[in-house]
Image 1 (cartoon, one colour):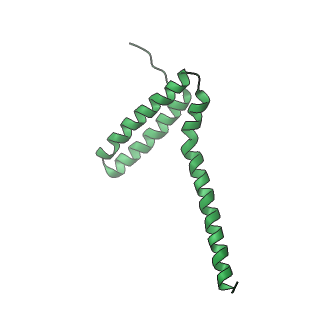
Image 2 (cartoon, helix red, strand yellow):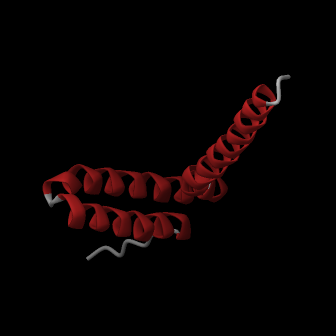
Image 3 (tube, one colour):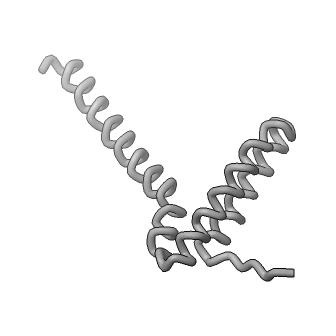
Length: 95
């Protein structure tokens, strides 16, 4: 029996993704998670493949890319809301 080890980025992704998939399946049903499970398996394999080729840094980047994108989107949304609030305040003051 061959031993198959996952690198740390692939393992972190797998654990976090499985938690998310199982939470989704619990709320929406088993069938909604089947495609997600297939994607998680393929993406975990790809991350591990990158690690085996020496691209562990890129693998970590891809694991954290959704989090980085979320933080950027939240920053943009907050700044946009501040600008809208400032602009609406100027209109009410007669500017």
